[in-house]
Image 1 (cartoon, rainbow, N blue to C red):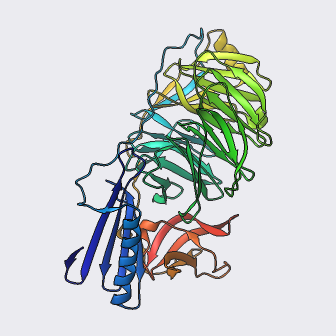
Image 2: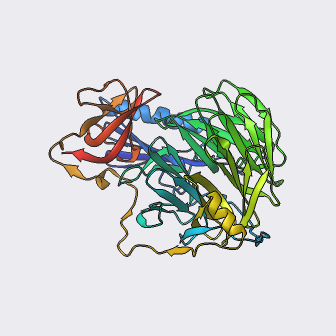
Image 3: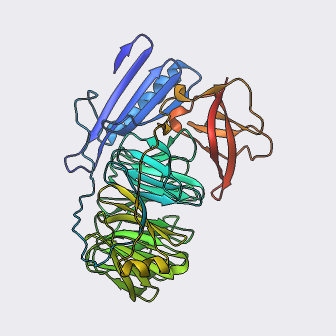
Length: 483
């Protein structure tokens, strides 16, 4: 422990040769305040601040925390000497399409880097790439905004009207307001492949075939190791978490109570989609398979000509879509009859989503592609008639937003704006929580709030709070600190 006046810091690391763990733990004591920082080696990590009645109690608490970590195998280290662990980036190949006709592409937007993340809602299209850029566009392809995140975007997911980006730095960023923030900080020994969020509960699938579940307060709930590695699929709802890996799809009880069912698929799962009563698994053996959520029974198989990188369905599963490794996109009816196969005109679709007779793809060349999937447009394309695709350009003065990583990054206000809600950071059971002060809310509920900007005793104003099923509030809109 090194000391400087009243401030002392202990820095520890745990790095295992097999890559199972590669993380740090740092404890700083400054008078009566203990600051704990932890996370992946080489990353900024997550910070917790606790204030004690006396300096002696602060020192005792810090010594206890250090002792617990040492007993778990952590050792004293020098910050910066050990390199960050390598992050797995999905390695894919893309061959030219063998389809005779090209899909009716309405517009195409090049992000500048290979892209996996896509989400389309009532107002916006979202795309995230491996350079850490997330762009929002309207449905006609006009660029609206850009988010600059610290590392590559693995995937984009929505939970009601909150949008989240899972990144290679091990964090999940909330992009729902103008100023994005890290809502979850995943364990340093989890190599994220995909994630889903349901009612504020984060479900993470990883390289080793593991499934990690984290609640709205960024606290670990439970984890499981499925039968196969390379888990590219995770989807969640009220009844289960559906985990797709190289040995099939496994459903787990949402509370971690155990496995509900396991179904081997025809080939390892490379992508997954869900509807109300079914899940769809795209596999390396050239098929999409539809499984019953209740029993895991395979209800239909949709045969493609190459490995399936992505899949999607129209509401109710009337149409099922797939993108393969040979730059083709397919459409099937519910029972598995192939209706058409067309070339994407620009790489293989790594992710996709269907909405209002349009199919949105993100491809190996880093493009977000909007395809007219109406029956009329596809019939014309099969005869060789397609629209002239519009190449979307970045707006000259596109607003760009970066995450708030420190308390000083938050705008301050002297008065509470009309209609805003006031919240406060409070110490509770050794943790720094956020509770509501404004009337009309349950003051015993916690608020899902970015840890990076929490300051003990500080008050903040937010545009709105919305209750979630788990008994907590979620922030909607801008966060500002109250002077």
